Structures are given as C-alpha cells and as structure tokens.
Image (cartoon, rainbow, N blue to C red; front, side):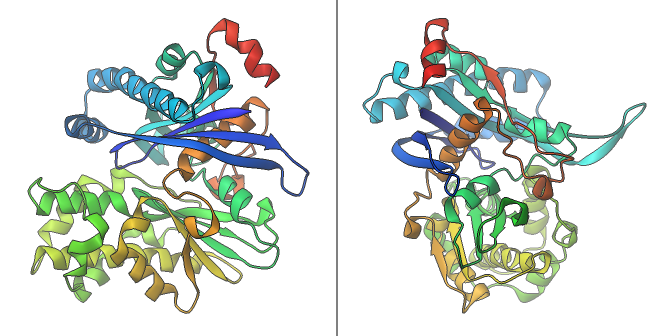
Amino acid sequence: MRVVGLMSGTSADGVDAAVVEIQERARAKPLGLRLVAQHRIAYPRGLQERILAAATNGHVADVCHLNAVLGEWFARAALGAIRRARLRPQDIALIGSHGQTIHHLPAPRREPGLGAIRSTLQIASPAVIAERTGITTVADFRSRDVAAGGEGAPLTPYMHALCFAHPTRSRLVVNLGGICNVTHVPAGGRLTRVRAFDTGPANMALDLLAARLSRGRRRMDAGGRWAARGEPDPRLLRNLLRHPFLRRRPPKSTGREEFGERFVTALLRRRRGRPEDLLATATLMTAMTIGGARRWLSGPIDDVIVGGGGVRNRTLMRNLSEVFAPTPVRTFDDLGYDSRAFEAVTFAVLAYQSVHGRPTNLPYVTGARRPVVLGTLTPGFAERRGRAARA
C-alpha cells in the first residue's frame, strides 16, 4: 500500500510530507517500509506567527479559520510529495495526517459532574485534505489515547521500536523536535518493555530565543553556530534544571503551554551576559534534560540514536555526545532512516495500522487504560474507496 504521511511539529514552521510503500512481512518484522519521496512546505512567516498566537491566546474564530487554512496547506504538501514520487493521487491508498497541535493539556482538569478531563487539539481539517486530494485521510491520532486515559503523547515510540530494535543492543532513541521525547528500546525490542516520554524543550525554545534575541531577524540558531560562540551560565543552568516538569515521573508529555513563550520570556528576564551565552545555556539544558531521562529508565543504553530537526544543530549534538560519553551518539541517517522525513513516515504507518484495526498506542508509555486504534477516518472520493480497500 502506498501511503502519504503528513506532519507539522510544535515549532509550526511548515509541513513535512512523505510517500511510503508499506508491505506486510513475517511476524519477526511485521512491516516493510520504503520511503519513495518526501516534500516540505515552509509556512509563510506571517502564517507561522498566526499559528503560534492562536496556540497561546487565540480566539475561537482564529482557530476555526486556521483549521481550514492548514487543511489547504497539508493538502498541498501531500500533492507535492505525490508529484515528487512521479505518481498520481489515484495511486495513493491513504493519507495519515498528524495535523498542527494548537493546544495540549495532558494534566487532568476537574470538570463538575465529570471528574478529571484531559484534552488535546490538532488542527488542519482532514475534510479539506480528503476533498483536495480525493484520498481517504486518517487524522486526529492523539485524541483516542487521551479518551482512554492517556496523555496522547508521545506516539512515535511505536515506530522507534519498529525501526530501531536490535537483538542484543538496548537503544535510546531521541527525537529532537520542538519538544524532545525519548524512547528506550531494550534488546530484543518487545513492545511491552519499551518506555518513552517527553523530556522537555528542544527546538521550540531555542528557535523562540533566537528570534527574540535577534529582534526577529532570525527564525532559529542555524547549525547552533550562535550558541557555539557562547559560554553556558552555570547558575542559570542549575535553576533551569529545577523545572517541575523535569522532576515528574512518566508517563508525561508537554508542549508550548509549558515551554513556549512564557518559558522563554522568563528565561530572558534571567539573562546575564551576551545573547550567545543565553543560547549556549539553553542548548546545554536541552542536552542535560535528555541525559537526565536515564533516572526513569532501567537497563543499559548501548546506543543513542538521534533524529528530528535538532540533528542539524551541531552545538546541541556535541553537547549530547558529552552528556552520554562514552556511549556512542548516532543519527537516524547513520542507520539508514531520513531524519527529516521520519515523523511524516510515522504517521503514514499509524494510518496504515488504523485502517487495519491495529492499536498503535503503547499504554505503558502514554498512561492509557488499554491499547486503542488511533485516528478518525475521512473517506476520499467514492470512486477511489474500492481501490484503497483492495490495496
């Protein structure tokens, strides 16, 4: 089956799309995956700013409008990836869309008469995606896990175990997105032994800091070059590492609500010295929070495998190597997986498993009461539904 996966992370800087061929295999390696093509659409600067504003203090009208707008952008990304694969929409059986997280509230809130309620909201209308492409679309993956008592995140551990399990080596898989999450895949790769959780901020906080410190002239610290010129502030670093989220036991997940604008504003108030020193401190904090994840894990870590946009930040990667030394730190690309496309491929796989009725949440990771089939399905054009089912 050919499936398109779509992903936009908490940094809200664009949409990644991947065309994936998925084939059933023997029990030992249940799915064969081949990345056929990938495509990325960067959001215009103004759109990114509107998304981030809506995520923190937007009105209902803003969220309503952006839901449709982002559906159009996600559809464009899907069609662009299909063209790059030299295929037609009719050749694609399914789209799996993560959407754009606009708010994530994994900590339960008390609601009169109902008790504790968790919630999460991803936008980018699957109806728009299905209508523009004609392809059946699976979206809203996180909500079902939340409804089952979980945090709805992280969802990539299923894919990490599928791709990086090793018969004799235990691995820590690190996803450096807007927020960082880690997955511990013990030797042998049994899903019931996999543990995973969010560790704290990554690219999102670093990007916001670079933008604020440069007064909008930069969108990120490209390559970590600005931080490389600075010296971490030991006192500030100690204070940052006392953040309450870092002391919480898993299951745990977080997002912009905890490590977005308010976090960066508070960090800027504590600033001493040069801008590069503050960036160096925040970059080292990210690496140390990942290293600190070891307190919640049992068993050895023989390899650290890093993916996500943060692999292009050389200062962060150097810090990670120092934090985990002498354990080797490698990238997804070193093991044959494209770091830029991995999350998009993940949601192609989750959509594939959804239409086959297979649960892909890991309850011992998210805290859900039971395994559940993730996502909601929006049919494509009627004349294509039969073709997708046969595929």
